[in-house]
Length: 147
Image 1 (cartoon, rainbow, N blue to C red):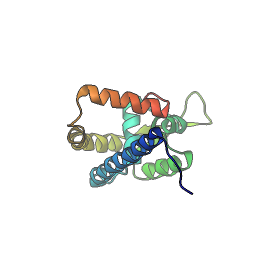
Image 2: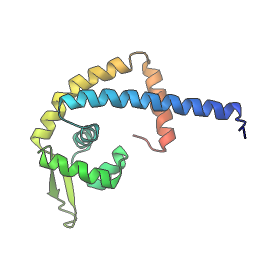
Image 3: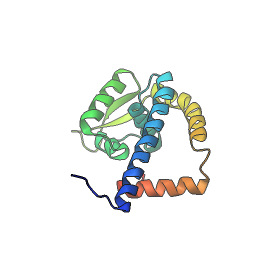
C-alpha cells in the first residue's frame, strides 16, 4: 500500500531531516572541542548556565537546558566528583541545595569559551546577524520557550 503525501508533508519531512543533519553536525563539532577540555556537551551547558545565572536548583538547570532529570543527576554527580561544581545548602529551603560553580569549573569554562566561540563564528559565518536572530526566534517557537 502506497501512502500519498501532500506537498506540505513532504516539505515538513525534508525540514525535519535538514534539522537533524544540522543538529548532528553541531553536536559533532561540540563533542570535538569540548573533548579537548575533558568536558561533555552536557557539562559545558551546565557550566555555562551556572556562569550566566549563578547558583541554581537542579530543576532550574534542567529547565534551562532541556535535559531529563535522570541524565542531569548523573551529569551533576560526575561534575561534582571532578570539582567543577559544588552543592550548597539552600538558605531559604534547608531541604534542597543549590548547584554552583567552583573556581576550577569557572576556569575550565573560561578556558574553553575562546576556542568554542571561534568555532561558533566559523559555523555561523554564512548567516547574517538578522538570519541568526530569525533562526533563534524560529527555534524558540518550535520548542515553545524563550532561551
